Amino acid sequence: MQDSGLQQTITIVLADDHSLVRDGIRALLEEEPDLDVIGEVSNGLDALKMVDEKSPDILIIDIRMPELGGIETVERLNAKGKSKTKSIILSMHDSEEYILKSVQAGANGYLLKDTGKTEFVKAIHMVQEGGKYFSGDISNVLVNNLFSPGKQVNTSKDNKDNPFDLTNKELQVLELVLAGYTNKEISEKLQNSKRTIETHRFNLMKKMEVKNLIDLSKKANKYNLV
View (cartoon, rainbow, N blue to C red):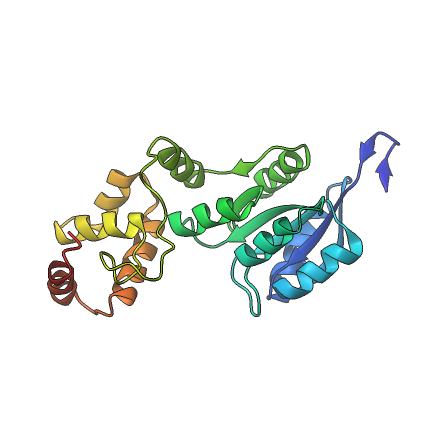
C-alpha cells in the first residue's frame, strides 16, 4: 500500500510473547497510513523465520522472550549480513547493560514500553531512513559510554575481580547505596530515573544473593567491590 502514490509503506513484524501487547502495538501503528504490520510472532526463533519469509523493513522485538530473546535475535539477524531488515528493541528497563548489549548486537533503536505514540512513530521513520533512535535516559547512557572509553559493560562470566558479574552501573549504585544515599538521591547523581535505580539495586542484591544492607555491605567488603 502507498499513500497517494507518494508515501512508501514501511512493513513491520512484531515479536512479543504477550498477545495483548502485540495487539496494542499493532492497533497503534496501523493508525498511521504508511505503517503496515505484516506479521506477529511470540519468540525470537519464529521472528528470524518470519524475517526470512517476509523480509520486512523493520522488526520490533521485545527484549525478553522464551526460546530466544530480543538481543540474541538481533545479533543472529545481523550476523547473516544479508538481511535488509532493521531492528528496534522494546524493553521495560532503561538498564545500561541491556542498552549497551543491544547496541553491540546491532540494534537500530531501543524504546521503552511506556513510549508514547508520537515518539514510537518517529523512531520507526528515523530507523527506516537509516538513522538510529535511542530516547531519554537511553541516549544519556550511550553518550556517557562514548566519552568514557574505559567504561564498558561487563559481559564476562569469569571475572575474578567481579565474581557476581555486576555491570558498571550496578557497581556505581552499590557504592552509593553503601554510602547511605537514597534511590532518589542516586537517580539525581547518576542522571537516571528512580525506576532504573530501583531495578539496578534489585539486580545487584539478587546477583550477590543478599536480602538486606548489612549482608550487602559485608559481601561487598569481602570481595573488595567498593
